[in-house]
Image (cartoon, rainbow, N blue to C red; front, side):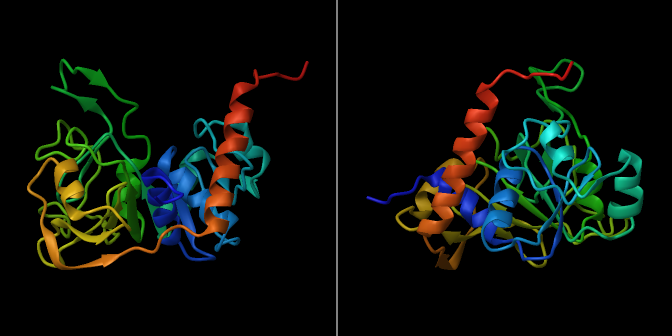
Length: 258
């Protein structure tokens, strides 16, 4: 038996995508965990930007939201939210946008708005935030999500952010779009012409059949699959320490200075 979980493999695989010195616009949740793990291991000079305006933040625990004080307290600087988008994202200064969502389709289009009909949804989600602009303007987009048939769907209930949709080139989107989807059952990459995502990489001991079962569309599996290297002891130690610190910090009540 392995000494790591599939969730840990997913986070490590996502972290490994990032290079030292890159500027990364970070989403909350799994993207934040992957980006901070990369910063704590092989990419200490990774520049993390959160939508709240924190530039070069180096949190010791994972933030609960973009408004978490940990982000501002450890940032190189904090700038107004509109400036993050106009001066960094839309100006072409973001190397990677790291996103997650509630739903994704086979072309990497994302839904973080509603589940069910928009006018009368079953669930109303947090909404677009900056994800629409990140998907359009970041030079490259990485996506990390746990794979289930409910989240990897044939048809989105609502399209919040664009992937490799028809007409992307003429839409004004400056970035290349999503180049990889990291899941807990393997890694998907897009076809160079159609943009449809297919299974390209599996994890040690995780068969391709598990990926097929977890994806809600007929998943294409590339004829030759790569096998991703298992997490190393230092990667697991850094990730588990980060998660432990985060859990301990979030158990404490918020205390405001008088």
